[in-house]
Length: 433
Image 1: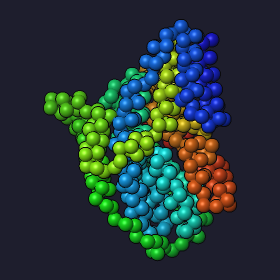
Image 2: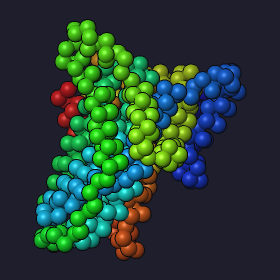
Image 3: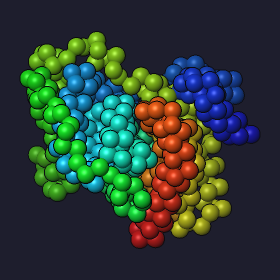
Image 4: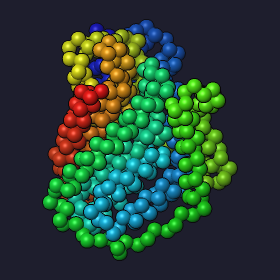
């Protein structure tokens, strides 16, 4: 009975958040308190201790460092330069948009930040080149998603934290995160290629964009920020990769054991402040507080669900009711349906990732396959106009007519196309793994 109440609480939190536009995480905290204290007999301190402190610290520290690149305009200027260099190749514009969004997000801007400044530029370029607004929207959305999934960027870090909390070793979580990044990079490229080269829009594109004005060069602070970002990424990535290559090397193992992206980002934030690369208050204000509250609040409710035995019961039901070979595909479909209305980072992955290890062990499935299928499915439909990402693209439409066109295109073309591609990919991954 208590498990049913917890599942209902998660659903009600999502529904209330969607209906009221109040952060889902706040509703989740309320339900975690009421169910945990008055339904399971836990103490208030026990509920407070369920706040996922490790995930909170990592998101906070990493996003604080990357906040300097956002505040001083480094990432936006880099995007402008990349778009300018593709001005003479309008047919390649969807790929340029995708790769620019991917790179900027991988450098730490995060999904929503990239959409916030790339979506308006992209849709204006679409009007100028007569490229389909939907093709442009898909390119910027899936590029931002894939880049944010990189192991040292916002979503990739969150995925690793959720996996570790679910009982996956850190080194395995790192490899799983790499697999998620690779998968969510390849699928959109295939989808975009099919959409662009097999649509009537291609013949209507303008011949060139040679009259676009050249953007201003990066200033001293922006160049220094970019260099510091690259150094930070190398500091985080080189030791674990070296440990994978040489697992028996004692020195590498020692260095890798001391690497923590949250602590390293804190060090680089202090360096950025000492170099005067941005305003501290503005960098703190630029933190994705809404996302942090949503992830941590839902995390508390998921912890209550674990205490109530909900996760174990769900795992047992899936293991008994669904053929083992189809379990990853079913997870992908469920996450895709959830993502039509809910956040991948704040709701879908915190709700589904904790179930994966027990199901994978019971059915002898590689957990990586299920993790990948969940994210692939969720991000396939994240372009829905009802989701947070899709609504950002919709709000960037350059006119009322464009608004209607983008809404219909996102809902009836982009989301279904992404869903079909995700199901086919997950089927292939499941049978080949």
